Image 1 (cartoon, rainbow, N blue to C red):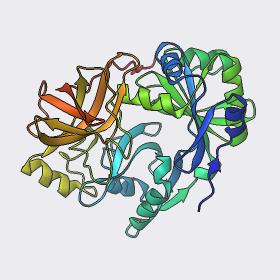
Image 2 (cartoon, rainbow, N blue to C red; image 1 turned 180 degrees about the vertical axis):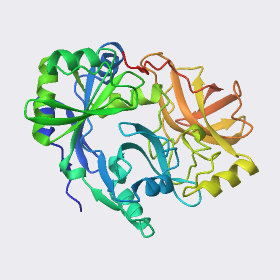
Image 3 (cartoon, one colour; image 1 turned 90 degrees about the vertical axis):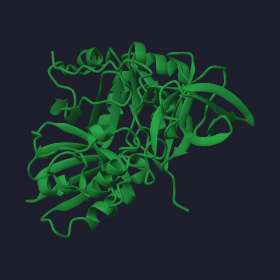
Length: 367
């Protein structure tokens, strides 16, 4: 049995009284105060997350750009150094190996950030694709730690507490910064629907920054609120909205593929075939009309016919309404279709709605 790992912030979490649980092989904080309070801190002010469990790979070599273009479903050839691009690695059948962020350092070097639960699988899969390329994939996950600071006050807090001005850092871009003896890589992407930053650095740096942020009034947040926040923003979680049984088209992420370009990539032909044949199911939003919580894997019916399943569902903290993301068979995916979710052997009524549960508050241009 594999030993559960600890991030460099483990003791800090314990000292703050966090509820700790095993997540993706790491002992991680689920909640410190309440999920609701942590959620609202990010929506209204600022919160921070330990995301040191995430995986990081370096891809280096003369063919690095050709390699990324081959394995990554989104556009990369037109991106400049300093850019960050969201997309997916796909199997030949079009289903998803993982979703990830690709940081372009140069034409010969990239930095990939992948899901913690998929580090081993992703690394092996990427290495298996290198045969025809002059490229090396290096797993740097053990040497890099990360804090995500999120919320409308995130930029101001970083400036106030670290003296680092990030106002000119554009959305989905990164830069290098110094704090004392530490070198920081800071990007502006986010997984909450709010403005925010990811800070990558050594264990010592991340431990010190966490303490500075905490003392400075940034609210520590666990994985519980991280999930409720990303869900309200309709952002996917691997193993729920996307997986090795789901394609980007079914999940509604065609925008993050280069399927309509001349560029080739693993899984492209399968997506083209699926697009031509027509999708049999789609990820949609659902809202219940009675107070009940539609949890992941719960079955969705139209009258007596099973038509899909919940991928993520909550009583929304921001909307105070039971909502969910669900994979629904066509034609029942159409907006306003009446459905029922089976919850504890009771059929709870609801309807299909759009996935725009709230307006995202990203800062999409530098000041």
